[in-house]
Image (cartoon, rainbow, N blue to C red; front, top):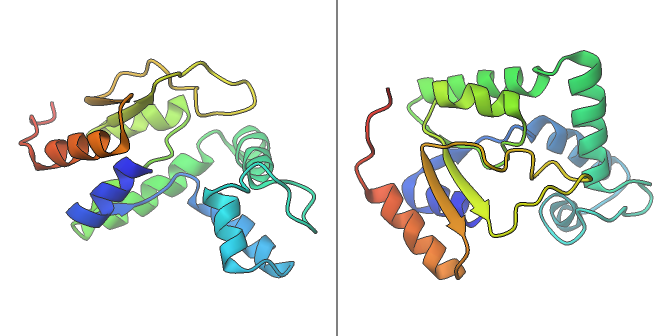
Length: 172
């Protein structure tokens, strides 16, 4: 989140998430049952991500995994979210925007992205996969640039600023 926020706030990047359609669906559902914007934000980004909020019988994470992984990837196509993301990103790139996607989780997403943009990976100190979450699926994935989130937020923020201001090697 810090990496993305620095790029968006200070360097004009546009955030385009693989999960945007799922987040929009959850938001619509939450609004339909009367949840206020602050509660929805907390479900999507904060302390309520793992918690069902009445009257919905599931948390946002359960909804995202159920719709995103179990339904769309397994029933429709494993490329469902990649295809939607590519269309959105290509439109933004045609407009000259720089893109940051901070929710890359699956190998088919990771395989596609290097053809479109530079891959910068932020790894956590402990990346042991949790079988209930998809965040650890790309542990060990090679990236063009790598940051390790093992120090203070201010030190990581400084490293992100240094990266964003440095000349990047050309893509091959």
